[in-house]
Image (cartoon, rainbow, N blue to C red):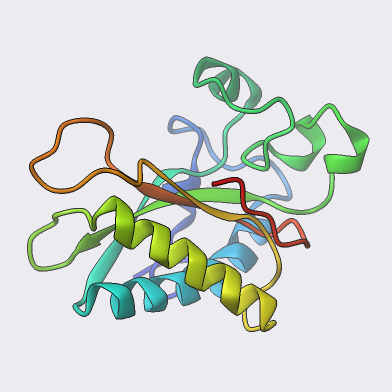
Length: 163
C-alpha cells in the first residue's frame, strides 16, 4: 500500500503537493516505520475496531508553515529550514487523524488523547523512538461542531507532550 511503510506513502507527507525536500524522504520513511505504524496499532486497540490513519499535516515548507501559524522551529519543517541550529536534528513530524475503517468517522478527541498517551508510554518503554506525542481538539465527538481531533507525532529524540 505505501512506499515508505506498510500504510504510508511519501505523497501523504508532501507540503501542499510539493515533493519532500531533499534528504527528508528517508526521515519520513523512518518516522512511518518506527512511530506511525505502531501508533496505528495503538489506535486500533483504543478504537476496538479496524482504523485508518489520515495524514493531516506532514512536511511543511517555510511558506506553508508560516501560512498555517506553525512554530518557527517546527519539526514539520525540513531540518535545514529550522532557524535554531539546535533544532536542525534529523527529525520530522506528522499529524494524524485516526478514523474507523468501516465508516470513515474520526475517533473522538478523548480517543486521540488516549492514543497520544499510549504512544508516550511506548516511547518511555523504548518500544517507539522518543519524540513528541500530543493530541489536539480533545473535546470533539461525533455530532459536535468544531475542529476534528488529531495526534502530532515526531521523532526528535526526547519525549515531549504539550497537552
